[in-house]
Amino acid sequence: MATTDRQLVEQWRSIQDAYFRTSCAIDRALESKFDIGLNEFEILDLVAESSDTACRMKALGERTPMTQSAVSKVVDRLEKAGLLARHSCADDRRSLFLELTEAGRKLHKQAAVEHRAVLKENLS
Amino acid sequence: MATTDRQLVEQWRSIQDAYFRTSCAIDRALESKFDIGLNEFEILDLVAESSDTACRMKALGERTPMTQSAVSKVVDRLEKAGLLARHSCADDRRSLFLELTEAGRKLHKQAAVEHRAVLKENLS
DNA sequence: TGTCATTGAATGACGCGTCATCTACCTTGG
DNA sequence: CCAAGGTAGATGACGCGTCATTCAATGACA
Image (cartoon, rainbow over all chains, first blue to last red):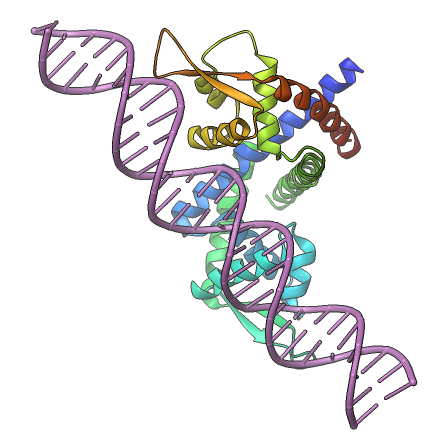
């Protein structure tokens, strides 16, 4: 019905709006201060948050909406930037597990603060 | 503080999740059935919804988070697909205003139904 | 053990959005 | 009327994400 449709569209627009505003804000903030984008941060965050278990690469793909190949490329960039390292898994030589470098850990810590701050500014 | 931060991040994750799920669903649906993407539909929708006023191109940019150049390219595609037409404005020859073609109006009508349906499935 | 299917990850072609820039046109001040 | 500045829209280089494909390693089963 018309009213339901209108409400749906309203709801959708507000999600879109919140999403765009917030993700752009995070992106700009991280980009300017730490030279990484939102996706890079998300990966950093995921790796940081599960730094005890192994064979991440695969697991990562399950925790983000990113494609496997996108994850691979983000990891490429982070590795080139010296923020994390790929290590091969002894028990399955196809798998890799990831680990933050010292620099990665440090940057993640700072970036996370910024991240939360921007969220606070942009969400209700 | 920790709890506030956690709530913020939770809220953000749920927005991201809703956004990705929904926009992907819309995109796939429109792509497969009408061969247009989400941004194309949004533009079509905006033009359809304000078909009485003129000099859209500019106005469009103000109603979407898309860049002016992105709008220009989306309009390119829609024009190539025969769904809308650019008309030059008599009183300001830099401006263009847009108009759906018959095909565009028809496709928009169908696509809008699909769009609302997918929203209904994906939003609370 | 040898074959065949499967799985983790990398890669290349491609599409799209962004930024910076460009062109045409309009406006204002002298 | 002309010059300088501003504005609408287009365009090209570029970065990133996706899809399809590829490769190596593994598993399953005869």
